[in-house]
Structure formats: C-alpha cells, structure tokens
Image (cartoon, rainbow over all chains, first blue to last red; front, side, top):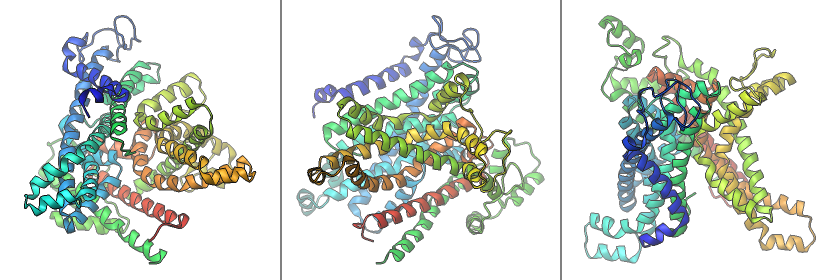
Length: 273
Length: 336
C-alpha cells in the first residue's frame, strides 16, 4: 500500500483535503482570520456580507474569524483524546488478548461495560468531575473511547496468536514484548487506521456535544460547539448564520474523517460498520 | 440450558456492569481533590460550620468506603440521594418527573428512525435506478455525522419560525385541557381518548423525534438495503418467482429476514440514542433526563450526575437483556 496509491483513492483524497483545510485554519489562524476572534469588529448581528463573510454575532464579533480560531480547540481536543485513547486502548488490547486468562476476562468485561454506555453522557460526567477545560475534555473523551481500541486490537490478536509464525517466535524464546510489537502489531495497523479515522469523526461530535453543554472552553474563547450554543437564542430571532456556520464546520470536519475511514476500509477490504 | 436460566444469568450480569460505571464515576467525582460542596456552591466564602452542616446532611463527611456502599444500598431501595443545590430535594422524585418525557422522545425517535431506515432501505433495494441505490447507501453512512443541535435548530428555524407549522419547544400547549397519568403524553391522551391533546403532543414531538430519529436511521438503511438486495437476488426468491408468487408476498418473506439484524442493531443503538437524547432535549427545551443532566452540569451537582449515570447504566443493561431475549426467541439458531 504505497503512499501514492492511498492518495489516489477518491475518498481518502477528498477527506484529507477537508481535514487539511481546517488544520490550515488552526495553524495559520493569525494570517487567515481578518479580525480578532474576541473583540467586536462591527455592528452586532450583521448577516453575511462583503465585510463579514459569515456575519457577526450578538457582540459584533466576526463569525468567520471565530470559526477559523475555533478550529484550534476542536482539533487540539480531538488529536489529544484519540492519541491518548488509541495508545492506552491498543496496549491494553494487545496485552489482554495475548496473555488471556483471568486478566483478559476481567478487562474485557470492564471495557464492554464502558463501551455499552452512552459515550456522551459518560464524557459529560467525567468532564464535570475534572472541571471544564479543553485538556480535561480531551481526557474525558479519551477515557470514553479506550474500549473502542481495546476491543478492536484484542479481537485481532486473538485471531492471529495461534498462527504458525507466532508459535515459531515463541519456540525461539523471543520475549513477549518483542512478539507483540514486531510480529503482531504490524498486522493490526491497517485495521487500527480505520478505527482511528472513524473514531476521529465520533470524537469531533462528542467534543462538539461537550462544548455545546459548556464543558470545554470559557467565554470569550472561540469554539464551534459553544458558539452554536450561545447563538441559539438569536437563531430563532432570524440570525441563522450563528447556527449555520459552526454547525456546518462540525459536520464537515466529521465528514472529512468519515470519508478517510471509508477510503481506508475500501483499500484494506475490512468493514467495521 | 433453558431459556429461563439463560435469562437469569444475563440478568445477573447487569449488576457488575452497573457497578463498574458507578465505581468509575464515584472515583472521579469523589476521590479527586477538591471539596464537592465548594465546587457546587461555586464559592469558598462559606463559614466552616455551615460547610460541615451541608457535608453531614449529604453524608459527605463519612469515610469514602462507607459512602460508596451506603449509596449502593440506598439506590437499591429507590433512594438516589439528595440534590446538592436544591437542598433536601430527593433526586429520585426529580428523575421520576423527567424520565417519562425522555422515554416518550426516545420511543418515538426509534419508531421514526425505523420508518426512515426501513423505508429508504427498501426504496434503494427495489429501485432499478442505480442513483437512488447509491444515494441511500451514501445517506446510510452519512447521517451519523449530523450534529444534532445544528439539525435541530435548522428544523426549528424552518418549521417553527418561517413556516409556523410546528412548535419549537416544550411538550404540550398550555391551552390544551389535559391531565397526565403516566407522563408519556401521547399515551395518556390516547387512554383518555383526548384527540386534541394527542395531536398537540404529537406536534411538539415531531421535530425533536425526527432530529434524533434521522441521526439514528443510518444503520437501518444499510442493513435493510444490503440484506434485502442479497435476498432478492437469492435462489429462494428466484424459486418463488418461478412459481408465480406475487411480488408483494415475496417482499413480505424477504422482510422477515431483514428483521433479525434490525432487532440486534436496535439494542446497539440505545447508547447512541440516549447520548443523542441529551443534545436533542437541550436543543428543543424538552423537559427530560437530558435537560436535567445539563442543568445539573451547570451547577456541578455531583450527586445528581452520579444518579443519572447509574440510572442510565441500569437502563442500558436492561435494554440489552431484552434485546438478547427477543433475539433468542425469534432466531432459532441462537444457542443459549
């Protein structure tokens, strides 16, 4: 699976393009955003026009600038949470699946219980306990998604651990860590990639949900979900742009990751959903 | 093993599941540094005596392990503790007030998502146009990325503000003469044969239930489409057609095969359904457990949040048990 081949896949290419636009927003926000995201730039509640392409909010702040800066929070939380849960979940899954026994039974039961519980509600409870902040939100989302990686990797390890080459490695007396990292992990990487991109789409929606409830940032920090919540009262008074643009960005970013995962699963030939 | 024994074992397994979630939430809520009462009140400027009084009223000055087990025992007796904010108010009675609204919303949402999913899946499977087929396939994998508040607000804007067809929030109009019995308004209205109230409640339900239903309909679309397509191309259907059995009858047979995966999936959907209900209720000011939870989040009311988590853990366990039982009954291949 060469890199060029991956990029030729229309799903991956378009998904990646969407995600990269938002990454560019986050990295070059200072250059891209025409106004400050936290100071008033014009009259309040202006519909989209030439000066303010996405209109202004009730405090006269430029929505486009808030959207651009807001991508930082979403991407940061999502990147942090999925790397954390991917790391912890994968390790636990690999070890639990390989070693088996009581440890595996107990860990699987714990993971299944968390997995079956509504992820948003658990994330809410955890972020309330930790206190509302972007980092704590990332930790809460990470905890919620650990079982996703655990189940995936554990299942995979169990399906290959009795193959001949693993038996051989054991017979040669290789240490367990080496067997897991060198002989099992490479086989699991492809499926891990699908879970990763699928999970990113999920994590974006969970992050947006937490933000919508006010558990990630404090005003005046720009954040898509929180902006949508604050704009809610003005939307029904006709200020549709306060809802349309943050909502569109959340959906678009999640769609980008969903496209990538669709593309990867088509290349690898594995269906998870 | 008989069905009864299978059910008993499955039911017993709910308990450790609930315990795991309770323990997780208890650990983060109680063992982490910081006094929960100070966090809930949002100020450190309360006299020591008053703080101690509140702590002992809520049982927070007992050793942690006592708190841990006491809560469990009380919960089993139906006492979910007392709110930290509205002091002295039992959480159980709050939840009893709010739960029917959430039940009503989620039941109608499932019905709508089944209607959308099975309907569009059927349309895609029997349509001869490859565009319709591809469209349903795309929709089936795309609806889950909809952000519920964004869709909900859009629907409110179009149907409540501009078209003025449906109410944007609440459960029933004040002008309707109606006395709730179970708290599930559409059911209550039917019991009392109060057609006006039924229609009014339904109008209030339509937007939130559609929002949540659409987001959940994706898997049903794909399941129906894929399974129906496979069955309609099978030898079985070919044999039916050769014998001149009508297409309507063939479809009836084919649909039976689609129902088993649909039932299984409905069980898996419940977690998503309840998470989605929180956002849907917040968007539409629907007075259910979701808005209750969000309300308590604003005030950092730890005891109430803990109660909601344990309650949801029980609900999830019971639902998956029910689905497993239905599954065992309708699919003779299931061994238990």
